[in-house]
Length: 256
Ligand code: CAA
Image (cartoon, rainbow, N blue to C red; front, top):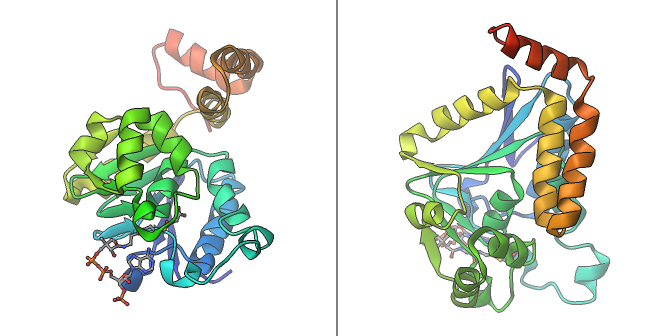
């Protein structure tokens, strides 16, 4: 599928998807989201890829769902059309690790998209927010759930009920992002992280990602059971054998 609104490239085992709709600050219209879903599906099933980086431009990761496209939508068509449905879900069902490299605005659906990724690395220029309240709606792509789980109820309430933005430093303090780096270092640092992850055992990455997500999606006791059920079958896999042998033999593991 030829893409018009995203650009994809690969660097070894790392795939990079760049949102590329500069005229509207990467507003997430239907076409962009279906191109993104297609690219994610493709890289997820490509055996040579082990980690995916999702990024935008210096000015905007994404300024939200496309307000111009959705301004005339009404219920029940929004439901019947599956508005913000399947193409957005692909991001959360991607099996490989997905890192969001965020520079500039990550607002509304853009913030939600970043939160759907597994790790967020922010440039010091990043600004996060859920400003939907200011246009008469609420977050519709998981923002009320994921922001609350990431930064806690009181701060999530304040953010979502006022629509205010949070800068990168506050986002790091609030645990919304893993790390803040100078804007010029955003891609080099993110690629370094992605390459490090891509060097790990793919099956262990899959099980770790699923188990961490279970912490979000289930109660603790169920999550711990889920973790155990993911952990035990790793024993006896070639990568478990290689990883543990390499440690004992004081050499680097070969997870090829
Ligand atoms: N949808 C459509 N177009 C958008 C957009 C969006 N979410 N965000 C920005 N744009 C467009 C602007 O309309 C403008 O286009 P024109 O040149 O044709 O007028 C262009 O991008 C540049 O934007 P601005 O001139 O506004 O740039 P700025 O620097 O003055 O402001 C901004 C930047 C603060 C990000 C501002 O654009 C803004 O507030 N954008 C909207 C943010 C927002 O409300 N996002 C939530 C959307 S709803 C949602 O996401 C629902 C959900 O939960 C899934």
